[in-house]
Length: 346
Image 1 (cartoon, rainbow, N blue to C red):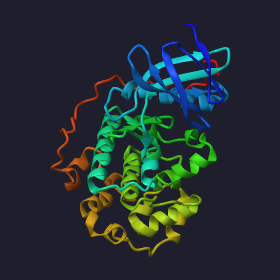
Image 2: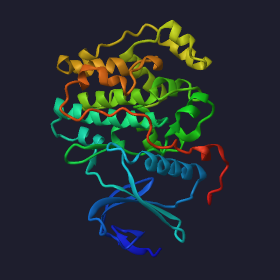
Image 3: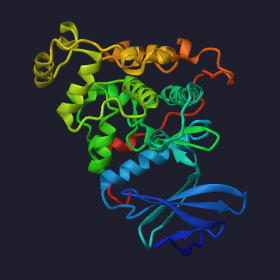
Image 4: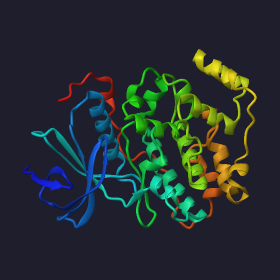
């Protein structure tokens, strides 16, 4: 396979000849992203260049995890799909060709653009639709946030960035999990804003796909308020902001927390009363407030599931096609590499 070297906005891309008109559209710690046109299909696509490809074993696993998930899930309308994958071994570069989207939900929320109730419902409908499919495959995304929800000019939404995804079965076993610590500090801090209490209080404990549902609730709240609901400055501040809204957990809920230090912290914040979401967002968002009541719960087992959200009035009587709920259509994603001590080359 021959690759052509191109200087794109000061970054050298080694790509297949079919990809034309490259233009840098984003940069980050992960690498550089360029838009392009596939001459064979005339499709507009995005190429993510990851360099160095094998700088660190943990980072490499992050990328491998993302590729495997996107290949498994990408056929779904609301999940970003991979169109091509190739590498330049001489320069230690990996190229992932994906759907090209116009923006992300974070940028839209932060923009002066008006967001109506119809906008919010359509975004949330698509998010829930994608999460239903992800969970049906036995996968937990674990990093749902507005910046990982890409959108088009037509308000079509697709979920991306599966670098922190994990199998539900592995999460239920608990144990040390270092994959939350591989993000650069800036991203790590932002991600914390959408993280449920159980992942902060007992990071080595067992958890379920309910962690994603907490994130879904945070995203809805951010759409309603046009700012993050829990923008914690640090670990403790994050938890304080959460309990200032949802109130102190009950004694029986604290007893179920296995970590001694976590129980001590929870005992120290007793007396906080729950704040009505109507007081935060007003009565105009009443159906949405009811959804928040079902998602932003300390007790993860009581949170609404993605499928269960469809029973809420907020998602009823929509003009869109009905969400298909079916058994997983693809084989389980292979996460066996998580348990192996692989070399960077492997």
